[in-house]
Length: 206
Image (cartoon, rainbow, N blue to C red):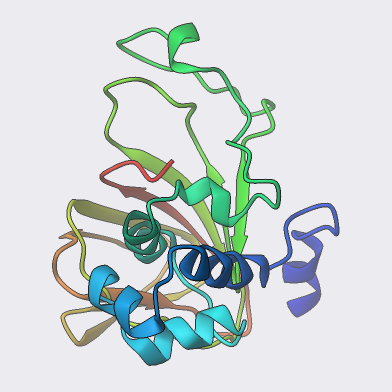
């Protein structure tokens, strides 16, 4: 089953350790210590150090807090050249909806054991961030983290441990969780199979 997890991440995609390397680069460019970044992002010094060294992965919502502290778009942590994700600009999009086809080649971002596939194009004024998240087995647990907004997760395949405010809940296919994101939370795949989740968060991350 680990072979299946590897198949979903071809060599053409971003390296899983790129996020940590970019975090270290941006932090040093701003003249911040790990202690300073921890104070501004709400994450611990130890966890940030592990992410920078490629020992731990970081979820998109926690990464959004780091990006805000470093005054960088989230996309720049995944793109080696700092370019924005491909897609239509706001001027080209209608103000009331977007339409995303399954064969459009949606943007994907890899962070450690997790691959995030964006499920909608950008749209001015839209606040939901819908994603398909593939979580490979193993890896280190992320640090529990609270942030502004709401979060919804629906398990499509596999099993997921979803911890909310220190309490673990095991989710199976068809199960879902919906919470205010200011409550510390984290998710983890402790099985030997790939887990697939549809996740919707606010605010938008890209």
